[in-house]
Image (cartoon, rainbow, N blue to C red; front, side, top):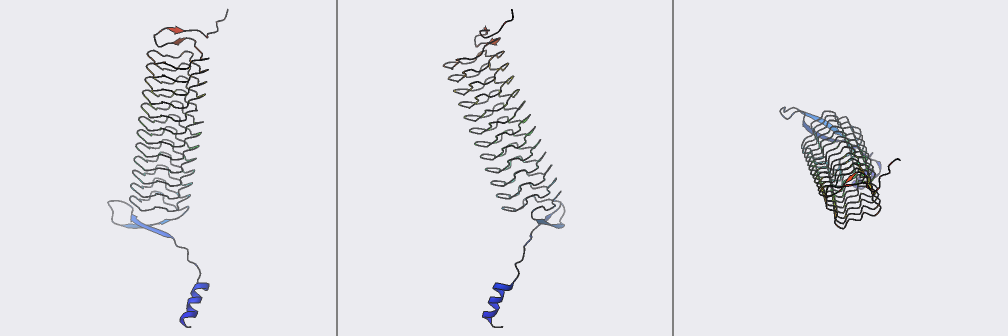
Length: 303
């Protein structure tokens, strides 16, 4: 067969080969023996040591990564949708732009990880450690972050619509411009957090916002019953029709805030700054005002 005919045969008759991407690494950092892992959808990588691995753009959708070690790994742009990774360690991993839709990351260690613009919608992050992570622009819609640790994390511009944030800690976290509409966050800790211009049309009953920055935040119709807003900055915040009953607002800055038809029954406003606040239709009953006086203007007393 001449060279031309051979070229045609190669072009038309060679059966395409499916390549399995293999990554070799040590099972134990102290052990020099190497094991080969198959990096593919639905792969079983339970307990695997992939620390420092370059898995950028890899397809690990549906993979079993239970208890796996991926510390310092590069998973940028990788597909981990539906992956099962409870108790996995992804400390300082690069997951920027990765797809983790519906992934199971319960109790996973993601501290220091880069998750910018990552899709975590529907993911289960129950009790996950996300302290110091960069989640700016990430999509956490309908995710479960119950009892998760996000202290010092950056979630600027992140989407947390209809997310379960019950008992989660966001101490000193940056949530400026984040969207938390429809989120449920009873007893969440947001002390010292930056929530400037965030959408907080959510259920936040019992949460703590002590010393947080909520300037120009949107809290319209938010449930803030029994919340701790002591010393918070609510400058020009939208609190229209919000439920602030029994809330602690002592020493809060409410200058220019919109409180039309808000419920302040039983609230404590000692030392609060209400300069130029719009209080039209606001409900006052057993409300402790800035000067310590009690306002019962809207109480309904039985005869």
